[in-house]
Length: 268
View (spheres, rainbow, N blue to C red):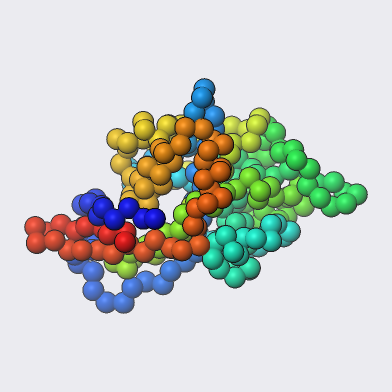
């Protein structure tokens, strides 16, 4: 259930909302990944601070981005269409984008070794991938010189999409010049891997607990996601909760222009 309490928009968004006229921009599919790691008895999540030269510069966000034509992983889980609420090809592309964007922006790869005998993935995950050859592959993927499918095939790996858990779905309000249908996923930091600030689109990154992230400037979908994770103490509780979350029905924010020159975002 969505919290009916309206959200106050940042000044830049208020300005766009009040000045908007005309036809809404088309919506592009996208994926955002909330990377989690255990710390003591609880967990932290990974956020990056967008560069001031970018849209929404200075705000904290999760790794993620739009779906690309080559985001077509196969084989992966067969239940993604039901879990994401879209047809098979589209659902698989969103999952592929999530794994690719995580690799591009953090150097973390959700993949495991492939058994050539029966073509099934083991329960293991790729360990340390900070070596120079891995970094060269990450850069090639980011530059679209190498697809994730090609990378995994060459290294005899298979995507571990079972380490990815759908959490929510948001559609950008109509006043924004760029609009996305974005699925938010939670993912676990694989053992032996380290998230690194390699995206080129941030001015720094940090691990933070949901409560400690309260004072960080974020867009409404990011803030609501952090707040929702604050209801849980352990990663196992988050994963259990993800199985009950509705990531198929999108949250479609509705803007209310107020008499004082502001704007509120309603999520109901």
